[in-house]
Every structure is written in structure tokens, then in C-alpha cells.
Image (cartoon, rainbow, N blue to C red; front, side, top):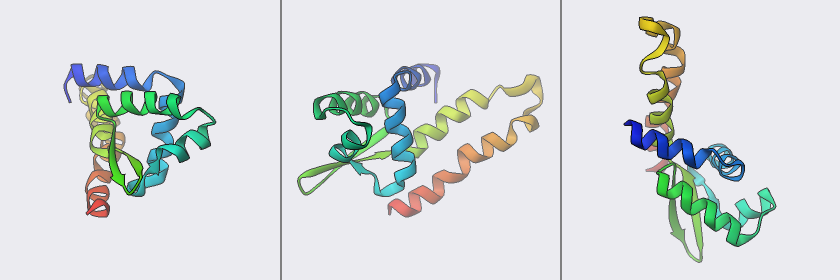
Length: 118
């Protein structure tokens, strides 16, 4: 992830509803959630959730897939992990072992999530 991508991601996450959406989608896992279910859970209008989902999708933090008449949104674990790695790559004044546990966590889930999605 480069700095421009990181800034886009942070801008998307810097709004309360969008941060809540990401957290819900991470918990939902590869099955994701429909836009209507997200709106209901967060107690926001359908137009409001659509606006926020569009911003998150534009940032690359979530993906969308049509299933019948619903659009199912899922967290993009690769992008989320990339954002964490971006924060950690110059970690701890030349002592990366301090941040190693967080960097491992940011990387370890990607293959598992890819397997579940296939």
C-alpha cells in the first residue's frame, strides 16, 4: 500500500458510520452482509447507508457482490491488512521485532480469508 492509498483508506474510516460498517463486515466474515441488514443494524436510512458503502467501496476497503436482489458487502481483508502493514512498516526506530506481532496478525488472516471465499 502506498501513501495515497493509505490516505484514501483513512479518509473513508474517519467517519463514525463507515467505521461501524467496517467493524460489522469484519465480524460478518466472508459471508458479508446485505446493505439493508447493515442499515437496520446501524439504524440509518437506506440512502445514508448507500452513501457510506459507496465511499468504502471507492476506498477499496470493502467489496460488493450481487446475490439475487440484494447486494452483499464484504470487508476487503487484503486492503485492511495492507493498511495495518503500512502503519507498521517503519515501526519502532529500527526495532521491528517490537511491532512484529501486529504485522503478523495483519498478514496471517489474508490466506485464510481467501480460502474461505473460494
